[in-house]
Structures are given as C-alpha cells and as structure tokens.
Image (cartoon, rainbow, N blue to C red; front, side, top):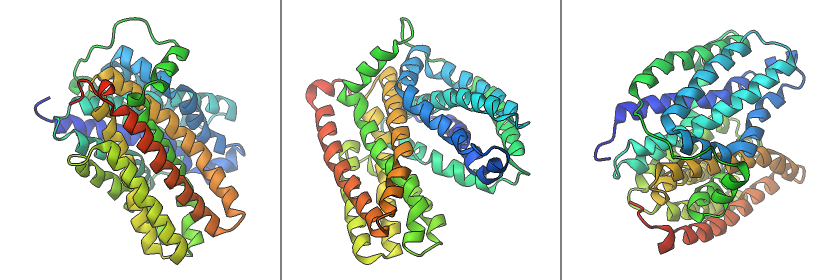
Length: 373
C-alpha cells in the first residue's frame, strides 16, 4: 500500500481498546464481582485459557475467512455477549458467556493487527504496529477512567460500545478475500505455525514479555516501597512500546526485540543492586519496546495477510501462556524475598535475549525471507 489509511487505523485501534476491556471490565471490578461470585477470578482466566488453547487456530480461521469477516463477526458477537452479561446471571451461565466472549477476543486480537498492517504503507507499518502494541494498556487505563455504577453497568456499556462500532466498521472495512479451501484442522494449524520460524518468532518474544508485565506490576511497587510506581510503570511501558514502532523503521524489528531484552536485563541488574524506583521506570520502558518491536516483526517477516494472521495467532497463544504463568512464578519467587523477584525478571530477560536471537536468526535466513518487503 502506498498510503496509510490513518482514519481506518484509528477506528481499528478503538476496536482494539474495546477488545482489551474484554479482560479489563472484569479485572477492574473484581472485588465487587467476588462479593457476588466467590470464583470470580476464573472469569478473567477463562479468556486467557481460551487464548492458550485457541490462539493458533484463531490465526488459521482469520486467514481463511478474511480479516473483514472476522472483525465484523467478532464485534457483533462480543456486543451480544457483553449485553447478556449485564444482568449478572448465575455463575455457570456467566462463565459460559465469558468463554464464548474469549473466542471473540481472540478473533479481534488476530484480525485487527492483520488489517492494520495491510492498510499501512511500508514506511508507516512499523509505527502502526507500535501503536497497536499499546492497545491493552491504554484500554485498561481508559476503562478505569469511565464512571460506571458497577460491573453490570460496565458490561452493558461495553456491549453498547461494540454495537455502536459495528456500522462504522461495516462501512469502513475493505473487502479482503480469505484464503481458498476448508477451515484449518487444529493439529495442522499448530504444526504450520510451530514449524515456521517466520510465524512463531514474534510470539516467542511476546510470551516471554507477557510473563513479566502483569506480574511485575503487581509486585514491584511494594518490593521497592514506592506505591506511586503502580501508576507510572504502565505509562513507562506504553511509552517504550510506542517508541519501538519508530525505532523499527531504522532497526530490524527482530534485532530490536533481542536488544530490548538485553537492555531490560541490564535494567533489572541495576535495579537488583540499587532498588532505585527510577531505574524501574527506565527498565519498564525497555520491556515495553519488546512488545512494540514484536508486533512490528509480524509484517516484517510475513508479507502475506494469511501468514500475518497466523503469526498474530501464535502471538496470542504464547502471550496468554506468559500472562497465565508469570504471576504464579513471581509469587513463588516473592516467598524467598523481593530480591528474588527482580533476579527472576533478570533471568527471564537473559533467556529472552538468547531465545529471540536464535529464533529471529532462523527466521531471517534467505529461504525464510523470500518476498518480505
């Protein structure tokens, strides 16, 4: 594409903010929901578990049906399901609605960046992917600012938001055909993604990154005796993600991922030695650049929209694995002391640097890079 369709990019990004609130609308009201449903934390993990099980398959489905159909279908279904949650039914039907909503969330986080990449110029694509990488944190932050009376009202407002976007998306989204052939077999879909360095490389870095982000947000302010970090660490992270999009114009995204892990490891080493909260902020800037560079790497490695959808599906799957596993891992480290949490983060970043250097090296081999812009 010669010119970036910034208006459409903005509309897709707003849709992404609502997809982030498919997690956030429960997390932000978790105490109130626990009063009504003692097992309410499972309402959050239901979406993550579905991402672990179905992320790669979602990538294959989006590749087959096309990003337009996937987005419109997911937005329509998400609107209905969110409105159905608003009366706060009994736990079992609410859990079933959340599981179904998880499928809509998966379709969106795969199809939205796939279409954003397709509607961007070669020069702007890394920046657009860096912007996309901020959707989760920005969605949570905006959700916390919206005044609503409680979880039921939040669910209703979320559904209305999706419903309001549907006609705009129907009018604005380009008609992009999907791939020919039947829907993918789950085993074949996983084999196709996990056997290709081009498809799986962005997901490897993203999964390691997500194992750090939410877990450290939960524990680091208390470990450093700096409660104010709870508000500023996400902002530092989002800034790093955004800036990485501009850096990826000049630095290969794969190399940027690896060096961002190296910078993060250096930051955690300094943090371990000093316990300085300002170093924590700088380190979170570095970890944020991992996410932005990883999203930019998807179209950099994969010129075909179908392959971009599959790579985004791999990112969704491994990212949810990291989110699911990171907090218990850091909680276990915390039982040994706060220093062990920081040391664990340092070890994870060193592993991330080594793992991404290897997988991106494989993905950059000439045979894997044919036709990459």
